[in-house]
Amino acid sequence: MSQQILRLARPTKIELIRLRRRLATARRLHRVLRDRLLILTQELVALYREVVESRLRIHEEIIRCEKELVRTSSYVAPWIFEEFSNVRIKSFSVVLGSRIVVGVRLPLLEHEVVEGHYDPSAYPITLKEVSECYEGVLKNIIRLAETEISLLEVGREVQKVKRKVNALENLIIPRLRATIKYLRMKFEEREREDKVRRKRIKQILTRKARI
Amino acid sequence: MGEDKTLEYLLERELRVVNSYIASKRKSLAELLREEHPHVLTLSGDVHMFRKSELILAKEVIGEDAEKLMLPIYVELIPAQTTTTGVIREEIAAKLVSTILGINHATPLYVYPIQLAELRRKIGTLIQYVVSPETLKEIGDFEEI
Image (cartoon, rainbow over all chains, first blue to last red; front, side, top):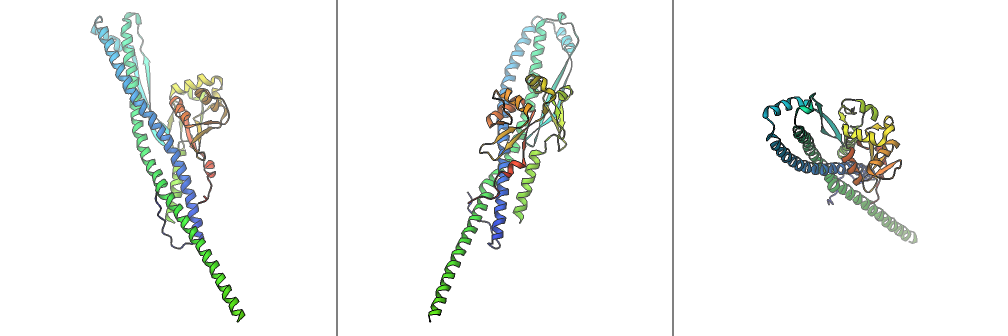
C-alpha cells in the first residue's frame, strides 16, 4: 500500500475539500470498475470451462462419427454416399452477429440448416445417422469458434480493467487518504499551536497588567 | 487540478462504456420471435443479437406473457452492497428469471453472483448489466478517516 502523500502547493482547507471530493470520485470509479471486473471474470471463467468442455465433446463426437462412417461404408456404395450428401441438406449458413457483455462486443454465431427434399426410404437409415452426427460436430465447432474468440476478447478486457482497479486500489486511493490524513493532522497541529500561543499571550498580558 | 479532471473523465467514460449497450428501443419477446434475426440496436449503434434457442426457452417459461416481456432484461448492479448484487425491477422479467433459477418469485428480484453466473449460462444474450448512476450516489461523498 502506498503511503506517499500528494505534493500540495499550500495545505489549506480548500485543498482538503478538493481532496475529499477527489477521493469520493475515485471510490465511485473503483466500485464501477470492480463490478465490471467481477462480471467479466465470471464470464471469463464460464467461457474457459465452455471451451474445454466443447473441445472434449467435439473430440468424442468425431471418434463416434468416424466409427459410424466406417461401419456404414462397409455396405453402402460410394456413389450413394455422394448422392445422399448432395440431397440431404439444401443450405447451411452461419449468421455472424454480436452480443455485448458489460461493454465488450463479443461475436455470436447462429447456424441455419435448410433440409433438402429427398425420399428417406431410398437411402439406408444409417446414412442419415452419420450425416446427423457430422452436422452435430459442425454445430459444435461453430459454437467453439464463437466461445474461443469471446474468451480472447474478455481476457484482454479483464487485463485492462484489472490494471485500472489495481492502480486505484493500491496507488490513487491510499495516496489520497494519506494526504487527507496529513492535512487533518497539520490543521490540528496548527490549532494546538494557536491555543498555546493564545495562552502565552494571555499570560504575558496578565503579567504586564500586574506590573 | 489535473488528477481531478482525469478521475472525473475516467468515471464518466466507464459509465458511458458500461451503459453504452443499453438498447435504444427494447422489443417484446413475441416481436423478437417473429424476426428472422432477432436483434436490438444499442445506444452506441451496435447490434445486440439474441440466441433463438434462448428466446424459445423464455417463451416456454412465461407462455402468454410473451407480449409483455421486454428484451433485453436489465440487471441493475448495486455497487453499494458488499458483494455485487443484481436487481431486476420488472415483474415479468423477474418471473422468468426466478423460474429459470428455481427461486421464489419476488419483485424486485435480487440476484447474487452465483445466480448471475447461472443466468449467464442459460439466458446469456437475453440479459444485460446496467450500472445506475443513482446507486453510485449512495456511496458517501466524504469518508471519515
